[in-house]
Image (cartoon, rainbow, N blue to C red; front, side, top):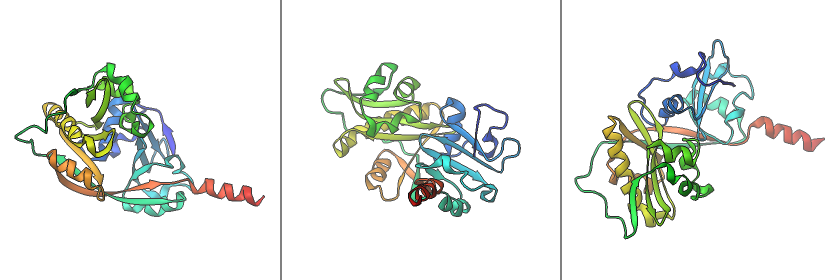
Length: 264
């Protein structure tokens, strides 16, 4: 696959309909923010196109047009693609792990607000000065701001809410991919289930913002993620559809090269 220059005439945005709910919102997010990459098998007449952002890839087109090894840039990624791509994905990577996932849309605004945060905790919209606190979450939670280019990008975006105590973020919810009709949201907690009610409070504030912008919040989680499904339900999200993603491992070309090196 060839990486295309952002904003190029050959950018494959026309392959992806605007206003799509769920992870495909990342395409509009990349167009709007410039965070992410565009890919195609050919610059002039592409038959396969992809958009990647924050370790996630949306892949479309005719898999038969792909040359061997062309999907290598998507190693160690989460790929969302039609099932017709499965044979070429299996041939391209050492491991492929499918995962059933659920997309929820925010349809219900609670008649009462979530449990009141504990003493000393403030739940509010993120501001640029919060970049340091986001960075302090460490590598395990760094994924939450990757789609905005890092802590400073999310903090200044106006699309995040956090529960903060003494300058430390305990939970954060943000628009992960921003689209024209939908905003796909994500949530992270510092210390596990103890802060679930704070995550709920952050999601409530974020969803109110999204509704005020005239858009609908969506959220996705694994079918096996019971806490995530429960959080989605209690925050007013309802199941919209199911889909499958593929977690990729090392490219098979690297595996074959390593084996050849050992044989020599």
